[in-house]
Length: 254
Image (cartoon, rainbow, N blue to C red; front, side):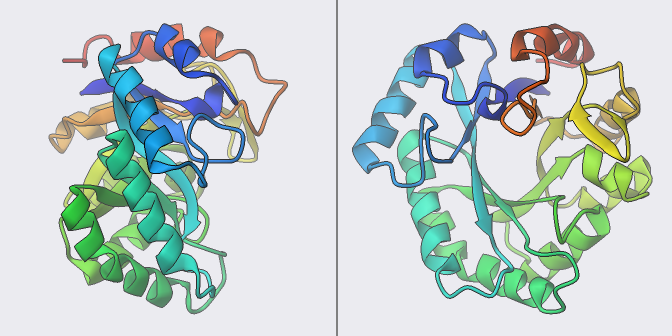
């Protein structure tokens, strides 16, 4: 496995600060005010990607806020543009969310949008990843959508907290996502009802069990620390969480 981190943990950080954290991979949060916002030009994306590559930092994922399953006619266009940005910055993956929990049409729309983006993703050499999040908290929910799309250009991102807080056993999530799993995110929280970030290994999330399940299913991709400082500004600095994350990854990094 390989260790990365998300710029969600350092909101607004310039490229040199991202490099200074010293990890081999990074998820770039694609939001206003960030290093690569959604309205960035191709030129800006190439410049950011080139600087990171020069420093030996791989752009693993463009972490977008596209919701593939919402009832909005602009979703396909937005997703296509984010795929272009990922291509220009050199990202392997584009992260998307599902949509509103309880929306009866969300799975149908998500499957249709993800299927529609396959040609663009194939051309760009990018894989679009549906995260265990919002309408699709569990591995079962995500796999249900991806089984319908059935394309290697669309995969899964396992955010460890969400299936766990939904009550899905780690082994079940791992087995359900195994055919589709391309990326994984580590975080820790105090309980299923207290979602502010805590230093990895000090909360209630079974992180060692999570890592063991990744090993069991033969996962050898990136594992990223998603430190949610943008949503919880009172949380300790990313610098305080990284040593614990490195310790979790130490015996597993190649």
